[in-house]
Image (tube, rainbow, N blue to C red):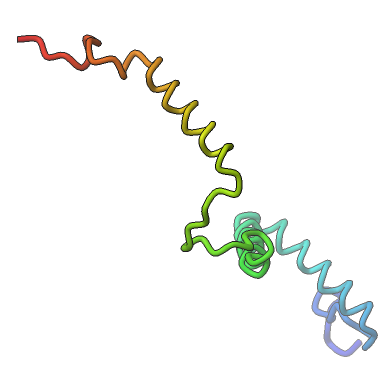
Length: 103
């Protein structure tokens, strides 16, 4: 033998792309089994990069510009329901013991 043991032999023996890819994936699985937290960090980092690259698809509107509601009647119904819910709330009444001061 040439002085190398089977453990020291390189994983990639041919120059084909399939065997190099397979060797890379095998080594990636070994790494993730030995270093679980590092692999998890890599996955989280990869997800952050994917979200950053697809941000225009995820949020197509500019968040800094205010756009008027498309349906004014729908916006009025939402506001009316919020006002009515606040009026029914016990905190909203001025005679509530929590808002009056005991002197």
